[in-house]
Amino acid sequence: MTAQIRAAGAPGEIRLAVTDDAGLRDYALWRPAHPDGVGDIHRGRAGARLPALGGTFIDLADGLSGFLPDSAAPGPLAEGDPVLVRVTRAAQGGKGARLAACSPGDLPPGGAPPALAGPPVLLARGPTPLAALAASWPDAPILVADAAIAARLPPALRPRLHRVARAFDSETEAAVAALAEPSVDLPGGMRATITPTPALVAIDMDGGAASTDRRAKQTAQFAANRDALPALLHQIRLRNLSGAIVLDVAGLAIRKRQALRDTIEGALARDPLRPRFLGFTALGLAEILRPRVGPPLHELLSGATGRALRMLDEWARQAAGRHGTAPALRVGTDLARALEANPDAMDDAARLSGHQLAWRLDPSLPPLGWSHDRD
Image (cartoon, rainbow, N blue to C red; front, side):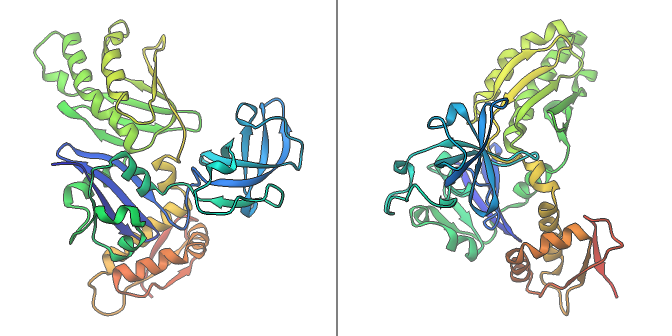
């Protein structure tokens, strides 16, 4: 089976999965009301320059800001100078967007050249996650069940549209759900635990298959790690893990781990962001550096917006096909703010479920807590 791009609707977002005979090949979340900003072009205004950081903060539209490194700037900037910039890395992990200077020629064709002077303004949006996946998989048909998603396809992608009864089959649903879990089942009975921290992502592999292998211990451990690593490193791409990543393979003596270099580099070479394998530390930990571009999946799922969308999705699935009135929701303070900022997501939940959503703030719940209102 050739690759297929599957676009499934959920409240406030569109889940995008690329699948083929090998399973889940790529994954992305598209939140139309909350784009990550990568590729956006702004007319910004220079703010304070920080020599110690080697760059300048740039004021952007809608009260946002980003950081323009000196190496990506058009030249020296004085505070207040206008500058055209493109977002090269989304704001994530508490850090603002990363920027690079661009020119009017980088804007999409058809519009009038922007005036250089003036307040910060967004001039052009970057590609959507669907457009990015469609470019990466140019021969893949786009399978859509939801008419609202089909209407969002730009004209250039409509010839690739295939309407289906269900965009995600059960296998795709299971593979996508597994991406939210910290543990990963690997070939040969191996297992890995992924732990993001503010400084890095730590991955620990746990042996299983080698315990029943009758070969010598180190031979069995090497084979088990070699066979499991490609699947584990593919998870880095699916989850969009980025920055510093350290990996502890299972049970293999430190001096033997260098023999896994080719396996690691071969698996990473299939990632379009071209992560770099930096080698093994003195403790035997594999060091990987993957460029930060869009926010990682765990950040998208764990924040207030992500929790609110997961709640709406669960509510819509339970309410769909239900006779009578669907249960109302009680939500904590952070979820209440997220819902108020996402009216389109609540409309999606009502459309997908066939029921009007009712909710109320319950200060007695944890800020990210929620429950059905049974009053």
